[in-house]
Image (cartoon, rainbow, N blue to C red; front, side, top):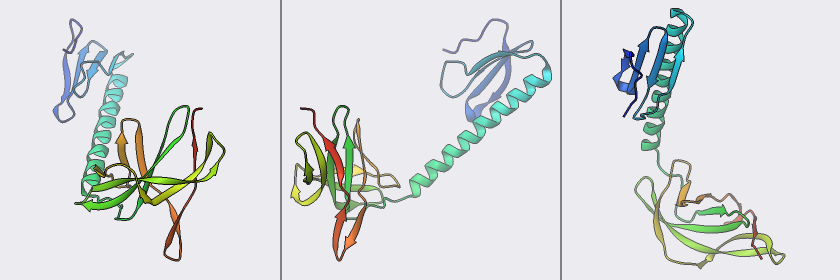
Length: 185
């Protein structure tokens, strides 16, 4: 429930932005969106500063809303850049760096793919740390369906995102860059 101080009356409203501005003398209290918390509660020295501030604030909300609409439209029309055979990598962890690789085994529609967890080859192993590259010949776990954004980034879990793994071609063989990993002993 939005709390409007006693004596304040509705001064301005912008339904498309869900904005309500209440006024008493040279004081304004404004709400925006679905939030019950006020965006600002200011007292202005004169009428000109009050009008200038309010106009600038509402215009800022309009431009932010328009940018969000344009971004959503671009994302809705975009397709994933991932193709069958691509490898994506998720590097995550707090006290250790875990590296997980996934192979795109199927593409479904514009944004969805089927990911197969794959193993890794340790190219440098110093016991509790080293480097690794993906091993597409070792399948680990069950395939699962996931949704990609326009950049090919996929949310694997609440703490882990995977992005396309860069590679160079050596003939027809993909050469992936090494990734650092560490483990907590």
